[in-house]
Length: 173
Ligand SMILES: [Zn+2]
Image (cartoon, rainbow, N blue to C red; front, side, top):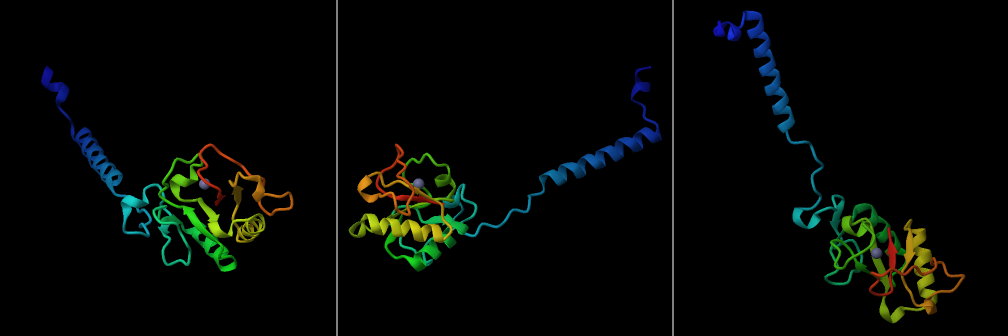
């Protein structure tokens, strides 16, 4: 009596085989690696969350040493435009970030901090840098907290100081 329960007729056996074959295909399909965009950089570890990052070097941009060496491609394009108009600044924070930031964009390379060269820092040059940055398509957050670098007719937005601000700079994206 017990045996009868496990006896399959041909139709049932056929259905079972078809099901197994289908299951194998589904499992194979799920295990197939997805076609991801190849990283533009060889150093996958450094790239981390910044899937659109490329090395900043050889792009005509000045960057402080040990302040990250990658940025998002689209951001680099805007910064390169800015550098064509204005040479008074350098990048002070790129990707990977070197300090804690409130803005998540620092964690994926889609924003950067830039600053006037120290010996050039004054209200007018800062206003000009904001003007040129805006013209290059950048959005500017002013993190120069000292009001002597700000005037109501400045092209820079009003200073916007965050706890994490470690020195006067413009946060751009
Ligand atoms: Zn920033």
